[in-house]
Image (cartoon, rainbow, N blue to C red; front, side):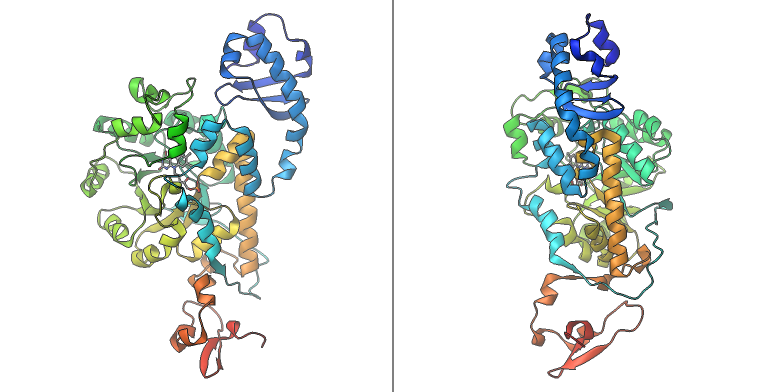
Length: 479
Ligand SMILES: Cc1cc2nc3c(=O)[nH]c(=O)nc-3n(C[C@H](O)[C@H](O)[C@H](O)COP(=O)(O)O)c2cc1C
């Protein structure tokens, strides 16, 4: 990365330099620059990494030309981003193919990747009305900490590929939005850098366990010292999934970036791919695939921080998590990046929250793209949800501001979902407010009278007999 000062180092200024007030920085890895032109922030595509290195002056001139052509687009960007899909479209267009594929793809044929999003649409919201929703409050309490809404930022590796400020920008966005930021072990900003960038954010540290246990000991004590509030162990990654696009692209971390939580080999071994994906090589060589539930005991013995297990997909593992002392679990299929044809996280959620029965907090992530998805996850028993890719798309669009904008789009949509479903607070969102689509396609004879007695509903709920079968009034057509 180099800045405006570095431009002057290369000698004579390019001709059109007067049009630029300040170039904040240039990320040649993802071939994008970020600067300010006539008081406005902009992005533009830079030339290739080699050009930036070898012919700085020429490429800077070219960059400036491209800034000028791109400015008009970015000026209207903020107004045009009205839903998460808009951020996605922008990011897909502007990331380099290898980073785009790394961020967006899933394992195998990517069946579960699509399912994560599609499965939400198989649940129907059952709104309740006339419940005074004039004042709404989205706040909730997670492991004793008050947060502004039930949505936070999932751990995602290597965020400086999306934007030069990477994890620091994302954490600042979470801080401003008053929600939780989870930093990945394999991040391109260190624990200390993120703590300094977002001192007031509620930060959790995600752990991958390396074969060398001293690495984990070191990470845990640094996270504690830096004020992180919880440790989140990802349990679904003894190795990384079959991510075919990464193999095709020989994906590795761009050479100007490092895994900043480490020194030496652990920080840079990911910059080269000998064959296939450099990331998968790194993980296979260094992560400890021999982990068992006994290691949870070990982890608990080395920290006072609450321990959250991420990647739980069955009631059996959820019950083990309780038995081994986890403070919370995240129902997650790792953004469908590990093993294909596993259930969507939202499909797995309901039976898990039922089994856990309130003994520990349950969160979920995977495929959350709209406020109504958050509403459905809460109704199915999650205390909060996390989002991964949407934050990377926001970062790509405009660093901290883009990530913040993503969070605000979610906040607005969650608020509308609450209002239009008759909920003024998170406590008003109850299990009966969401039904799987199969509920509505049952024939009359498949519905037992007992089922029509709605559970957990506040207020009056009436049933009516139709052809000698008792139905919820809501299902009986016009009254
Ligand atoms: C590019 C990328 C990198 C990720 N890196 C990590 C990681 O380092 N640790 C982890 O536990 N999960 C990681 N995940 C999984 C996310 O934490 C989360 O489970 C997933 O992104 C949620 O799905 P969504 O992207 O549909 O919101 C990553 C996901 C993506 C897309």
